[in-house]
Image (cartoon, rainbow, N blue to C red; front, side, top):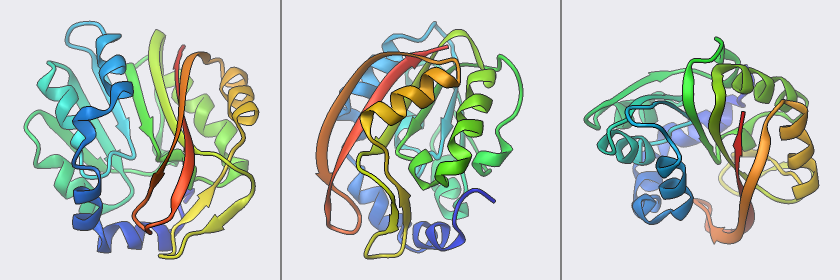
Length: 197
């Protein structure tokens, strides 16, 4: 399994707290841009969907949303949103060719081991339709470590993630950087990148 079991257990136990923390998902300009770039009635994969806030917004915009998460509690919350089909899956379960018009991987793949990232991105690139839209959010930095509540993170430099995306056959279009406090209360720097297949 490419997600650490202790990390999954934290999300299962703190699902309500995490839901409250991401309650302002609708203000995310990266999500608005992602939705705007999709064709009408697009099929979208929300990879590591958490409580399904982004998936719900995409469904309300008229898209068909498949939401996956390794946390069964997060999947329960995500599946309660109208128009969202949610199921438990890990990054290792990514499969298929040209299935999705868009893939939203917002701060989920940062929980995968560094050694697994190239194959996960390659699988996602294959699952994306030609010229489909891809979004990824990661915390920036170096190394891998647990936060104060036990979640395991892998950190990437900007150059590193750009190189990984290109190696997987994805073409970066734009990026945003910032810093926010996470569920553990610690402020961390991040990057989101929009790309296409």
